[in-house]
Image 1 (cartoon, rainbow, N blue to C red):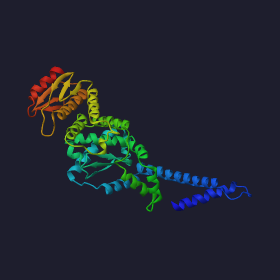
Image 2 (cartoon, one colour):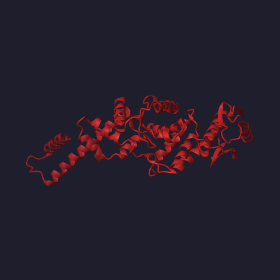
Image 3 (cartoon, rainbow, N blue to C red):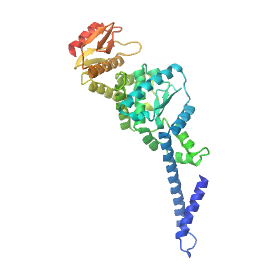
Length: 361
């Protein structure tokens, strides 16, 4: 950068001499100040030009994506647990197919992802569709459906280029300038290092977070995942945070909706998806504004979490099958091929539940 500044100084000085009268005296202090300001403007312009060029490379070329992917894995570490990685591969494959239904551009830039060993509840999408998933996600969320909600949210940030917009607002220009000035290994490497360090610090606005929540719901609707997992995620967070403070940028109240706001938004979307047939109030599932069932709690799910799953199944049945008659088979209630609820613990029998559903649907 020092050499660049010297060259720029000579270039500007030469330009000044071309326009300077032959009888002109020594440059005044004002001229010197102007020259220094011009040099600084030129340097800033160069830095921003390089910055934007490298951001575009990282975000849109395979070489740049792979470079960031490698840097993020080196910085955060990789959890190679075969069971968790197999689950993640399956979820990402299913979600990618769901995204492609409405956004086929994903096939041109598929997501790169890995599990890092952090036990915090978090996941993040960086430039170039590079995603990092904390191992802690799998501790709190009990089903692949729930993990898919969080990952679908992050994928929507990537598909909408929220990350590019957020990065340019979040990372100090002085930090980029320093990275470019000390580019002993190349400007691209320097900026990639900065991006890798700022992956979880990028500022995404609250409207963007709402958009990502809503798009994630659509991704799940285009998959076989249970839509009830959307509010179930936030119910689990609420139940967990009642006993201890949750950590992670995903819980920042400054740029994220509150847990209850996100939960209630998803309940509303399930109701809309069902054609206004299905609702959840407290721990009770309603059909046509009539109470259908309060599901029994299980070892893995509270009454409320389970209620959301039942509501998700019902919404899918009404949306896809038009609300055909419910039947009972081997302890499970069905509407067509769609399972609704399996009788567990203190639940009524599947036959009784099916009869109740048919009487109010």
